[in-house]
Image (cartoon, rainbow, N blue to C red):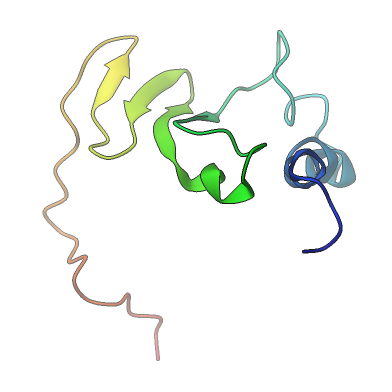
Length: 96
């Protein structure tokens, strides 16, 4: 819609955005020594940018989680956390 290819849009949202913020030393691309919070997708966003929401796994701080259940699958398997003090059926209180 904005005249970018899917690849250009993904780069603008990742590596180029990080570069604009000045964090390219630690973030934005997959390289040895950089932090690697990332998503594993079921479908390629290069084929259709809407596929960027087809999230299969999330890696956060070196731990891999199933996206649908939040069950940790690597480096050790753990059950998903239980959220007992949060009511996801009600909108958050924004202090209004």
